[in-house]
Length: 116
Image (cartoon, rainbow, N blue to C red; front, side, top):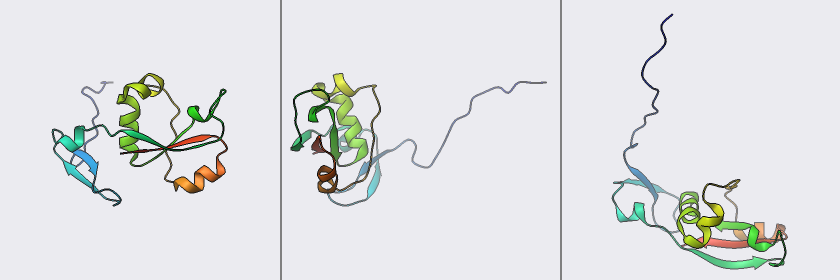
């Protein structure tokens, strides 16, 4: 019996392009060249609200609720020096599309942040 040679590769239209969110507040995406500055930028993470006690482990500082594009959030967590040491290559990261005020009301200890 012959064994297969070569390798399997997933392909799709636009694979050589970068997918970025369109305008702020608009739920839409666009394909751009990977060298486009918008595809390379790392968005900052701004603390908007803290719920619960910060001191102690686990405290509010251990739980993040990031409102924004999930790709921007993951890129920021892995690139921003203050966050990268904690989050790069670690899991689990749970991504959900929730309204920040609804989740913050139900989660006893969380830091609500958003990408800018």
